Image 1 (cartoon, rainbow, N blue to C red):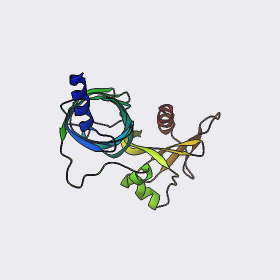
Image 2 (spheres, rainbow, N blue to C red; image 1 turned 90 degrees about the vertical axis):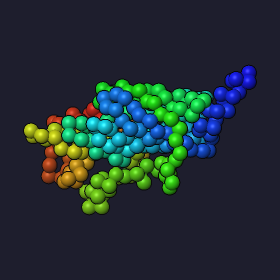
Image 3 (cartoon, one colour; image 1 turned 135 degrees about the horizontal axis):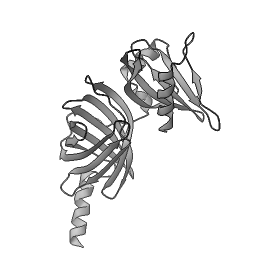
Image 4 (cartoon, rainbow, N blue to C red; image 1 turned 120 degrees about the vertical axis):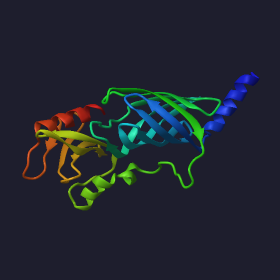
Amino acid sequence: MWLLLSVQVAWAQGLEDGGCACFRGETRGNDVVDARFRLCRRGSMVDGGFDWTGRSSGRSFRVLEGTIDGSTLALHDAAMTVSTPKDGWRFCAVESYALTLGADGSLTGTYVSEACHDRASVTLERADCAAGEVAVKGPRRELVPDEVQACRDRGALWLSDPDYYERTEIQAGSGWVPVWQVLDRHQGRAGYLLVYPQSCRVVVAVVAPDAPMSLVPPPGSSVSPEEEQMLRRWSSRW
């Protein structure tokens, strides 16, 4: 009984209700990643961020959301606000983090990204939070990536309350160009957007309840087969 109590107390000190904790370590999957997590708990809900520095792949910052049950955390990527992959790499959302808080302050487990065929181990230790470091809080519209915001400022797109961003690449001719995938839900409809940061070209797929997908190309343009394929894959994930 005493042993069980001591473990529970140690775990509670790791991520207390109403508090936040930071962890450092690495993940090992398609790449070895120097990882820094900051997690905050509100009852059974957890949010925070994953600062990803890949030794080969590049850098990303992922907004995390999920739940905690005892010492077990089930998280997923809610947004990717930084995505700068190196040549030959691309970043995808992580659909599932299965993590365990240890009595020693460790955070270990696995993550799975089906889109990137990446299954990784996660090995983190408790770390001091950096001075001035804050958790990811508030509506996700405050987390609009700079490249997407620049297109908004130019009047190239309108967003109501977007709640997911992911930077990837799309085939264009014989090469690949960067594009943001944005999910924007509004009044029962879901808008799946492709936003090209270099040109601010925006292609939208609108999905309403009990209705087929409707593709909306930019004025005077059309939706390419590659764009339609990406939008259909994109919408099928939700």
